[in-house]
Amino acid sequence: MAAPLRLGLAGLGTVGIGVVQIVQKHAAMLAARAGREIVITAVSARDQTRNRAADLSGYAWEADPVALAQRDDVDVFIEVMGGHDGPAKAATEAAIAAGKDVVTANKALLAHHGHALALSAEAAGRVIRFEAAVAGGIPVIKALTEGLAANRMNRVMGVMNGTCNYILTRMEDAGLPYAQVFEEARQLGYLEADPNLDVGGIDAGHKLALLAAIAFGCQVSFDAVELEGIGAISIDDIRHAADMDYRIKLLGVARMTGRGLEQRMTPCLVPMGSPLGQLSGGTNMVVLEGDSVGQIVLRGAGAGMGPTASAVMGDVMDIARGVRVPVFGIAAADLAVPVAAAVAAASAWYVRMTLIDKPGALAKVAAALGEAGVSIDRMRQYGHSDAQARVLIVTHKATRDDVNDALARLAATAVVLGAPVALRIEEV
Ligand code: HSE
Image 1 (tube, rainbow, N blue to C red):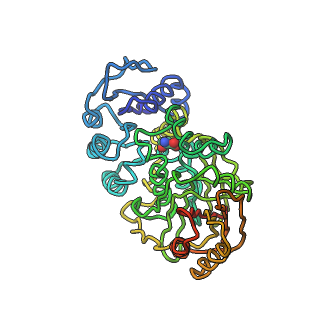
Image 2 (image 1 turned 90 degrees about the vertical axis):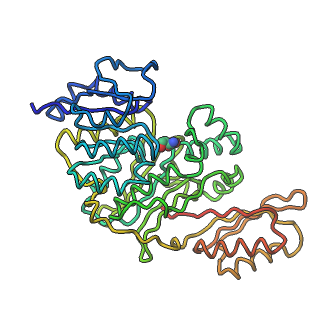
Image 3 (image 1 turned 45 degrees about the horizontal axis):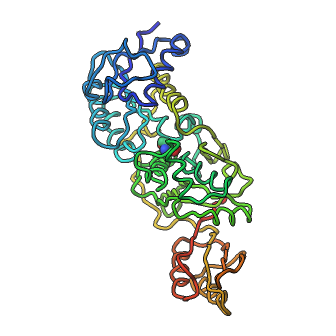
C-alpha cells in the first residue's frame, strides 16, 4: 500500500468535527477505496479547551493555522475555518507555498480570491478542491469538472442557500410573515453570524460565481453577480404566486450570452410543478444544462455536519487516489476574463402593486407599462379595502431595464401606493 495521506485540519467547528468523525469511523473503508490510509496528523482551532464531539488526543495541536499548513507531516491542508480574508487566506497561501494540496469549504475565500489562489496553486503543481463550498453535500463541482467535461454548458441554476429556502417554504406552509420566520430561523441557528450573507443572497452568490467560472471557463467574478435578497418578499407575494401556479425561490442563474456572462442571484418565480418549484425546506438544488447531456437536476443537503464533511472527504479521496483536475476545470492561466452581460436576458415578470381604488387608476397603470414597452400578459385584481386595491400583473418578456422604466413611470402616476415589487419569472 502507498504511504498514508496525511491531513492537517484547520477549523474544528461543525464541519471540522464531521471530517474527524468520518476519518475515524470509516478508516478501513477509506483506505481500501483510496489504496492508502487517510490519517489526520495535526489540527488547529481558536480554542483548544472547548469540548468537542470527537477524540482529538492523537493529533498534534497548532494554535496558528499557518504553522499547521507548513508542517512537514501534512500533505493536504483542509481549511474549514471560514472568512474570506485573515487566517483562512493566509493559511491557504502558506499551504500552497509549502507545497501542500488544499481542500476548502470556504466559498467566500474562493469567490473573492479564487483566481489568484488557483494561479499560485497550479504554478506550484498543487490542487485546490472545494466541493464543500458549493451546495454542501451535492457533488456538483465534480459533476461539472468531470462527468460533464465534454459538454458546452448552456445554463447553470441553483437554489443554494438552505436558510432562504427554509424561510420561503415556511412562510408559505404556515402563512407567516417574513419577519416572524426570520426570527424562527435565527432561533433554530440556521442564520450565519451575519444574516445578510444568507437573506441578502451573498452566500448563494458566492456559490453561483464559483459554478459559473467552471461552467463557462472564466475567472471567478463575484462582483459581477446581480444580487437581490429575499427581505422584500411578503406572504402575499408567495400566495399570489401560488395562485398562478408559481413558487418564489432565491434562484441563481448563470449563462453565457452573446452579450457576455450573465450571473444573477435573485428571488424568482418558478413553475410550482418543476423540480425547483417542488424544493422545500433547507434543501439545495442545482440544475445543470449541457449541450449533449440536456438537463440534470441534483438535489440534497446544502449544509450541516455530515453533508459538508462528506464533500470535504470526497475531495480528500480524489487527492489520495491521484485524481488531479485544474481548480476551475481549465488551467487557471487559460481562464477567460469574463465580460459581464450589461443586461440580463428578457423574461416574463411578476409585478405586484397597491392602487388607489378610483376610476382610471388601472388605465394609468396600463399606460405606464405600455410607454416602457412592457406588455401585459395577465392581470388580477384582489379584494378592495380602505379604498385600495391589490393588483398583480404578469408581463410578456421584458428586460430588467424596461421593467425598471415601467416602475419609475408607475411611481409617477400618483395612483400607486408604496413601491411595487417586480420579480423575474424564470423558465425552468
Ligand atoms: N448558510 C448556508 C445555507 C450554508 O443556509 O445554505 C453555508 O453556505
